[in-house]
Length: 380
Image (cartoon, rainbow, N blue to C red):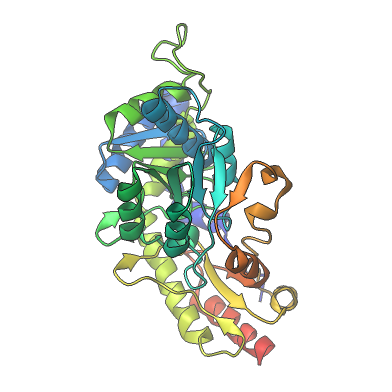
C-alpha cells in the first residue's frame, strides 16, 4: 500500500476540478485581482451560511484574529491598541497565531489550562483566575481540532465580567455549539482558509464574522490600511485583503464543505470503533449537542510511546502529525509577555501524548481500517 497522507489536496482538486477551474477562468477573464466581485460574493455566501450579519474577508486566519482584536480595542477603549496591562485569556494548547495576535494587539496573554478530554480551555480554571486580582478584558476561545469549546459557560463568564469573546474558528468551519454555528456566538469569529483547513484555498486567506456593525466597520477599515479612504486613513491599519483568486477558489470549494465535514465525521466513527478499548490509547471526546467537524482526529498515547508509535506507523505506510509538540507558554516569544492563569500541566501532558491521524475527507475505507489495524498491532 502507498503511503497514506494526512491530507491529499490533489485528490480533492480532481474531485472538484470543473468548479475550481471555472471560477479561476472567470477571474482570468475579468482581471479584477484586488477586491474583485468574488470577494463580496464569498462574504455574502459565508454570512448566509453562518446566519451572521457581517463577514469580512482578510488575507489569513492570523490577520482575522489580529484585526478582530484591534477592532475591539478601538471600540471598547477608544485607542489603537490595548494597554500592555490588559489581559486576554486563552489556551496555551493551540497554534502560535492565537497568542501572537494578542501580543500584536498590544495586550498580555494569560494562559489557562485545558480539559484533558476535549483539549479545549477549562472554564473552571478560567473562573478561578477571574476570581482573583486581574486586568482581563477578553477571552479567545479556540475550537481546537474542530471541537467546540463550551460556549454556554464561556459566554456566561464573559457577561458576568464584562469581557469580549473572540472565537478562534481556524480549525472548525461548519462546526456547531447546539444549533449555533461556531464563530457567531462571541463578539467576533476568526476563520482561516489555509489550504489544510476544512475549507481551504490555494494559499492563505481568512475571515472575520460578527453581528456587531461597529466591529465590522472597523475591521473593514483596518484591513485596507486603516481608513474608508486609503488616502486619508483614520487608524493604524494593514494591507490584509482577501485575494480575488482565493475567494474564487473558496467559492468553488464551499459547496462541498458540509459533505466533506460529514465525511470526516464518518472517518472519525471508524477510528473510534477501531481504536477505543486499546490499552494506552484514548480516543477524542465529543461534547453532546455539538457538531464536531474533525479538522483533526487526535488520540492520546500514554507512557512516552507516542513518538515510537508515530515512527513505526510511518514505516508501515501511514502519516501522522503531532499538533502541538510545545504549548505556547514554553515558547521564547511569550517569555515576559504572557502569564500562566493556572497550573498548565494538562496542556504540557497533552503535548507529549497527542497524535493526529489521517482524516482526508476522501480517504477510503481500506485506508481507514489499515490505520486502525496497525495502531492496534503496535500497541498490543
